[in-house]
Structure formats: C-alpha cells, structure tokens
Image (spheres, rainbow, N blue to C red):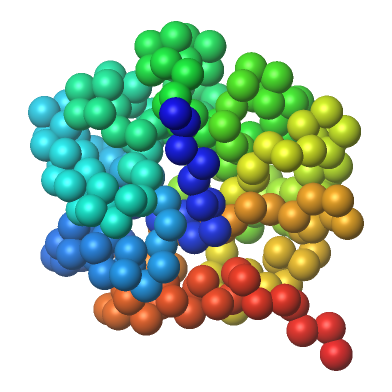
Length: 227
Ligand code: TZP
Ligand code: MG
C-alpha cells in the first residue's frame, strides 16, 4: 500500500560545506525529526554513487525508526538500490513515467514545478506531490528562474485546483520561520492551501535543529495573524 506522507515540514538535505560546515548530517536529521520534520529528501549533488547509497542507507535507518518517509533527489537508481520510499525529480531528471515504471505504483514520486505548464503535466502524469518554487531567491540554489513569490504560487495552485484539487503541494526556496506564515497566507486560495514547506538552510544551518524544526512546525501550522 502506498503511504500517505505528511508533507507539513519537509527537510531537504545539502552536502556543501557552506551549509553543513563540519557538522554531521545524520545527527542534524535525527534531531530535526524529533522537532517535527515529517518527510526527508536526501539531496546530495557532490558524492559519488557508492557514497550516495551508503549515506542514503544510514539516513534511512534513522527515518524508518520514526516512520518518516525518505525520498532521494534526482537518483532513481539510488532509491532502487537502497529501498527508499521514493524520489524527488526535477524537470531535467529522469521523466516521471519512466521513474514510475522503475519504482512501481507504491513509490512516492515528487516533481519540481516552477510554471503552470510543468505543474499540470506532472499532475497528469501521476506525481504524488509537487515541489513548487523557487518561492524566494535563495543562496542554496542559484540556478533557478525568477522567484515565483506568493502570486506565482497562487497562479499554479489555481490552475491545479480545477483538475487536481487534492494533489499535495510543497513550497520551497528562501523560506524561514519569519516569512512562512505570511507566505502561506498570501499563497493560498480559498480552495487550496499548500500541504507543507520544504527547507534546506533554515534547518541545516541551525545549531539547535530540534528547537528550529519545532518552531518551524508552529509557524506552518498556526494561522496567520490577521488582526
Ligand atoms: N529547489 C528550489 S529552491 C531549493 C531547491 C532545492 C533550495 C532551497 O533552499 P533554502 O535554503 O531552504 O532556501
Ligand atoms: Mg534534480
């Protein structure tokens, strides 16, 4: 049976010294999960295939112990090799129908979308969720198009709401505890709110990942103060 992930607080990992310093990724992930991270994507653009599989296995041991799904960024082969719950693919990675054929119906497959057309195509091809971004410019990923900002997110959600009203969506890019409440408020439609927030630096650069994840979860789940 396919799991139904909780996308509320979605941690995307990074492998660069600029973000991790000399800290241990597995320790940060474990602490952040105790603070409320509900899904983890292992994103590592620098390690070779052997190291990717080894680290993914180690992370999987940690996530599995809490029932948190682990998705692998880009690499369907790595996900297959170590039995991750799924993958996250971008527009330049393996296409979704091929990934689905390789991983099977129960795998969680997420797709990055930065335009209405990309979102609708991924939805029609059976993506399990969409990563919508970049919402705001971020130093973590610089090869992105013009930031969508909340108005661009709303345009995508509005296009999805007709044919794919229940497809989960996760916002990514430049998000932090301070800007999450208003970003969620400004990005939502009456009929559709994003299912969660994906973050790299806000969690990975924190010296207290437990407290940071917990504060982020509160920022995501507390209604925006209108008064
Ligand atoms: N995809 C779009 S933006 C981004 C990715 C992987 C990086 C987001 O990083 P941060 O540090 O949360 O802004
Ligand atoms: Mg990719």
